[in-house]
Length: 72
Image 1 (cartoon, rainbow, N blue to C red):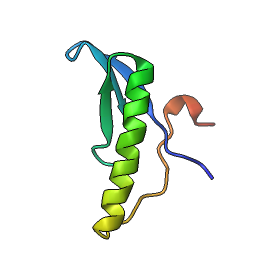
Image 2: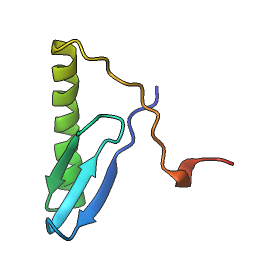
Image 3: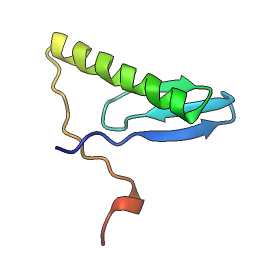
């Protein structure tokens, strides 16, 4: 099974790292290090999934892949 792609990038505005999961609307997190941001977004993913299930919202299949991984 494929899992969701996670982006991790430095935000100068926030002076820290942001991690997000593009397939899960508004699922993102902040951390002072890339590792902390990743850890936090994994917690956010768990909460996102639980909320979706509790509210009858369909959980999307993982489809997002950055251009660097796409084969021509």
